[in-house]
Image 1 (cartoon, rainbow, N blue to C red):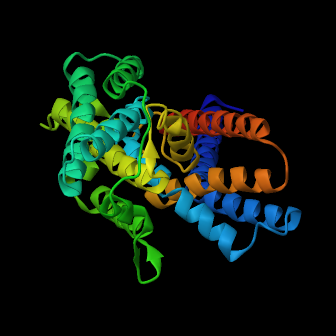
Image 2 (tube, one colour):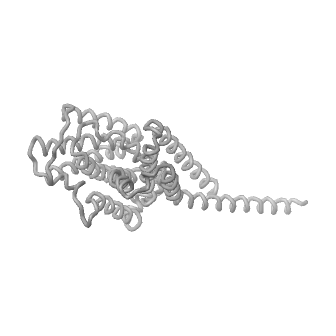
Image 3 (cartoon, rainbow, N blue to C red):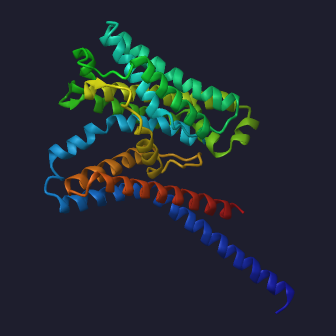
Length: 340
């Protein structure tokens, strides 16, 4: 075989390899986008067979209503994750926002609307603090938000003096207990947030910039977009939605203390990654993210009804997070090989 023939065979082999890699990448992209829905349906089927109490209207309704604030937090966190960052402080933001809002209503007799507005403003400011530090000082966001989470928690305990606040005005409890068309108000609120955020990502220039920021920050900067400002805004959006979720959480419980909130960040982060939001930024799917929240919710509810215990849930959730991150990393590396 001559050199020309060898080169032709080599090029043909490389072409087939590239095509196979591209086809595999397309299949993985489809799997990443829709697998969480099939996993959710499979879990519902399994637990319906394991427990007679699972597939009932009452239990399924409870799963939805009990996880509205988790969905809102996860949607808020998606802004940061898709932009290539991370925020480990959202649970501690909930702690601080929750006790301050409660104190305004219970101790200082603020009108409910004023307490809620100021609570939302506080959450936005906490997000702004994270955003400014990450964007201006250019510090790794994991370290920044880990540090601010400790600060927020400390302030929460100092302000509240570790007290529990309860029995809020009926106007505030209406957030969780009110109904519109027979559906709880917080479910409508959650649905509205999901639809609006999905439209922001798919229909607005700013949403496209957020995705581009996580995909290739340098290219976005060279296109004339202020990446610092965009980073700051995504953390503010996350802080605002975290505060909204706090109002729902506190209204549902009708009580709050500084220990409320921490731990939510792990559930939201796991749900986001399981739902197809890339840990490395640049990718996200809001409907799949919501499905990711329900995967964890159904898993926890089903295991509890099956009598598998709380501690087993921790193991399964941790394993799910590891698997999702590993799959995300594999997909990214495959994409790089296809481009090469």
